[in-house]
Length: 351
Ligand code: FNR
Image (tube, rainbow, N blue to C red; front, side, top):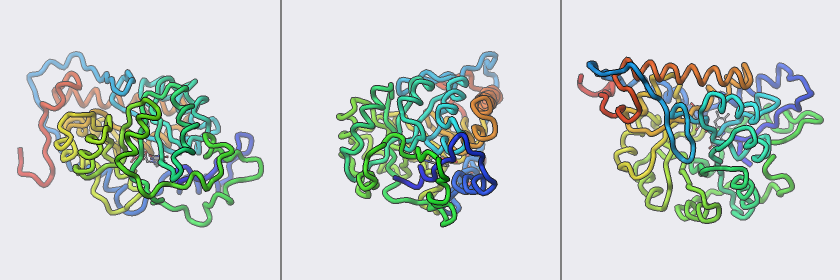
């Protein structure tokens, strides 16, 4: 359906070869140009201006939004979690839930949505528009039944960005007996019906909302005018994102794009952001710049791969601990007070 949900993972009962591992690396770390690397550096360009004389004995990172009550304003971005662990998204969901964070489940999940939701509890369902909208309806009905609290409509993939090199083609990875569950949610649907839509319209936001009764968050906006258009068309939130640098490789970073989107949206709906967020201070920078919450992509995939649910939980708890410490050091006891902190871009005159 999309390169982002590409290669099939090996079946649980087949050991991964060195070649499999290399291909998975290539896919997970894949980027189209320099944007993925610049995303990480983009946060470093913003320097916090801490405040003192504040009571930071008790810090709360708790956050609620889109029907989720989380221990921190952190959600796991829709990614190929199923590719790096035999229990895929179910294993990831266990770790995410134990850490008290949120899951945005990829449409290309390697387990059907209901099987992931059993483990995850409330979650957001990511959606890629297909040319045949009705090919999505049975899947979306199941996502609603499974307890999705909102949809995340990815709008920055009207065509595939990162393309797999020939040696990582599906045929090469799909060993005998491997379950090609990149399509777990679309069993029996002819591949032609799942062709990606290259004409994503603002009206599709309302279409999905009407069809499912769920709020629709628009993922993959960099220009403030697009964010405003999405909000005016009924979006319940926007995610500032360049898809982890996997679409256009030469875009501005999400850290650069965020402030103007926040200003344009003007508090009408929550603004989320992803791309290059690697440590608690990055989360705090995003919040000070006006984001309501952040998504993390590759770090979650790496942690799941290295240590399963426990490894992912530990990584997310570390991130939350870093955020808590950063908030104390910066002088803000809770998320509401975060925007009273100062922040300065490297190109601006000293504070
Ligand atoms: C993604 N991303 C993605 N986005 C989406 O909307 N649907 C998807 O199925 C996928 N799949 C996917 C697979 C892999 C392996 C990666 C790395 C990324 C993009 C993802 O949701 C997110 O926008 C970025 O990963 C965020 O950047 P960082 O945190 O990886 O730097």
